[in-house]
Image 1 (cartoon, rainbow, N blue to C red):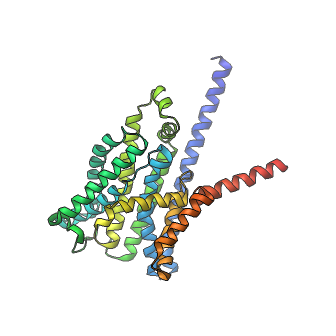
Image 2: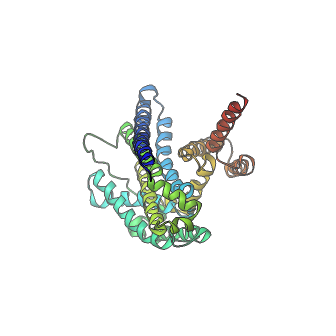
Image 3: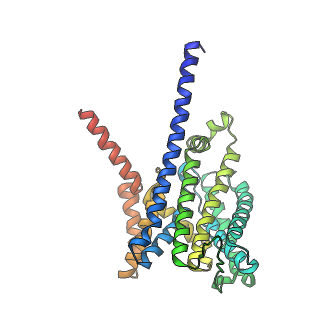
Length: 341
């Protein structure tokens, strides 16, 4: 490298670092603004239904976005990601019912348990490719679901956890108060999305993209593909578990449906609706799916048929998620305008 080239590289390096820090601070600023808007919503509306909708969006949004870390960024399609949503709900509920510890302790303990289980399952699954990975994760989910049903003395069986989840106050926060629960759910959503955004935009996130595009080349360049896949598998499990805990607090319990294979199907459907090429695609899909469910079920009992038609529209019509389509359309219009100029 010549002195001139070295000088140029030295001049460009701080600029790249500055841009990275600038993007990071922008993400934090957007997250703070989003939290302020969501947290102030109860000041402008007394609609409990709207607040409940946002709490549900928080639970499913964390869950679906965590799945996109696997599907969109790493190329790992998991049919059993819902097992971690169920583990979060049941783990948190059982700890609160049986140990009567403070909520933050139960929260952290549940994440630790999820990390251990995800490491064991992931160490097996990430060695497999494509459809084998997808179906082995589904097999593990069905195993966990069957355990929940058969271990009735511990999990409540098909009745779920009965008796509610204790919500002792901590640090002035009382989650038995609906407004406190709402604000806490919004905080977990924003913090979870911000953390996942930082993962996606980090060097590790770009390593995942390389593995998605060409795992063989990534391995040739010296990347430990198995370790990278296992790491993102565990991280995605933790965020899915957070979503399960939010849902457990919302319904004050946990039910076998939280760990059934259909919950994984809903997460895949959400990603199809919103898109996997944009970070906020799963959040858009979450809002769309919950709106569809809430609206369609009011008018017909055949809501499954309506959702099937919607799936066909996105799969055969747009051939991508709504946010992916919108971003591409805007980019196309911008390029067309620059071409005319």
